[in-house]
Structures are given as structure tokens and as C-alpha cells.
Length: 92
Image (cartoon, rainbow, N blue to C red; front, top):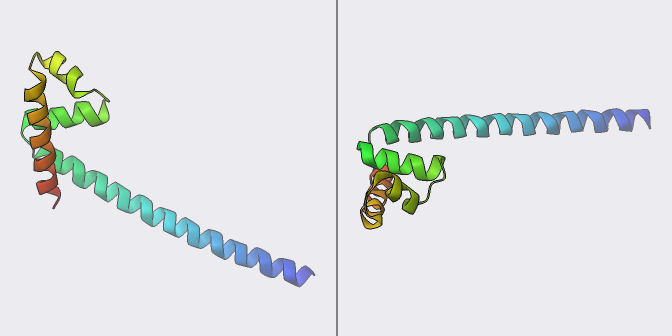
């Protein structure tokens, strides 16, 4: 019984080690991707960068951005669409 318990603990430890390695690898990939996105956003024109930042990171709706910028909603939607296309090209 003691031997079985020791083997089970060893196996559990090995499984935990594998899980921790995979989590670490996943975190590294996420960090690299986040850096890649930040660098790509820096290369966008200023209005495009700001509309993405305000929408995705500050949670503003496009209507709220339009009101804050004193621009028609259609203009902000156009900037937003171009920004997504530009970012997609930068990341490809």
C-alpha cells in the first residue's frame, strides 16, 4: 500500500510538472503575441490607433467615441474599419 501511494504521488508530481510547463509556455506565447499587437498598433495612423485603443481597451462604444471626438458616427465607423484592416495587415 505504501509503495502504491508513493507511485501515485510521483505520477501526480509528474503530471503537475507537465501542466506547469505547458502553462508557462502558454503564458510566453501570450506575452509574445501581446507585444506583437502593441508594436503593430504603434505603426498605425494616430486616429486608427486611438479608435482601437478606446474601443477595445477602454470599452467605449463607437458612438461614445464619435461624441467625444465631435465627429459623425459614420466617420468613426470608417476609421474603425480601416483600423481593423490595417492592424490585420500589420499582424500578417
